[in-house]
Length: 121
Image (cartoon, rainbow, N blue to C red; front, side, top):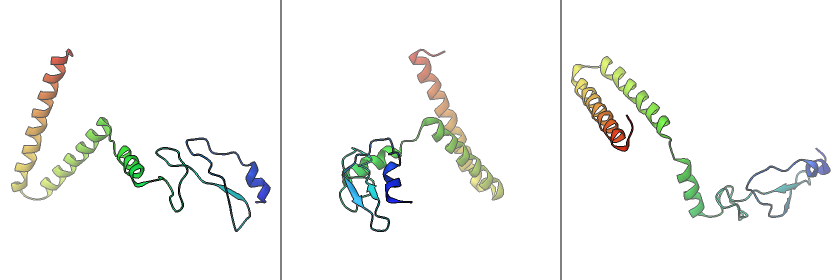
């Protein structure tokens, strides 16, 4: 691609800021560096996503948020896998499966009671 074609390419929308053009040695085209994924400030040298370690930790913590429905579906998959393992092994492991069932029944009963206390029928 000729160097002038790189300049005509539309810029990406988003929180990235332009900290100036950096010369590309191979093609001679200009390269725009994105900003910090957390605050949008220009990135210091050798940084690719976050400008400092504090913003990296905050960004990674924000990515770990799991929605309730997604968490429930994961729990169901784990319980099903546990049942397969118990069914394939011996009766001694059935006690652990029974405890999971009793705990889930207690949790559902408590949740229903809490919802009724708030006004749900």
